[in-house]
Image 1 (spheres, helix red, strand yellow):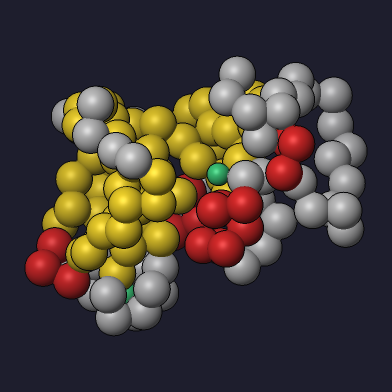
Image 2: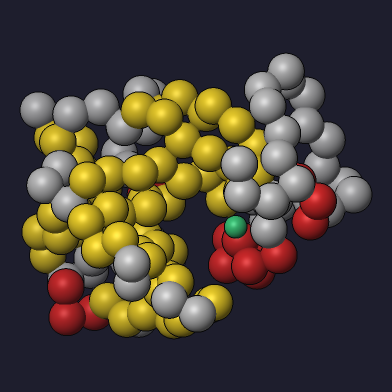
Length: 132
Ligand SMILES: [Zn+2]
Ligand SMILES: [Zn+2]
């Protein structure tokens, strides 16, 4: 079974095999800017589970910190995934574009030191000021 996903304008389409699984919420300043909100929810997917099925030519990337590239749709701006130059076998997916994200399992909060004051974390999951 594959879960389909797409950007807002549906130019970029992708598929993930299996369930989404563990995810983190990242409160860093970059994720605030890219989402326009308080955090990004990010799940890891091995490259053999994730594939772009349409619109690959519309993807562009921005190197938000050295060696970390944020891939997005150049037509609508949706964040699709981030990839590290040092780990090109792992897609760090922005799970909001998945049609069925019911299998997302948030396990921790990261970069809480940069969290906005107007959003409160109301669960008992582990919190980290930066990387876990
Ligand atoms: Zn798009
Ligand atoms: Zn972040």
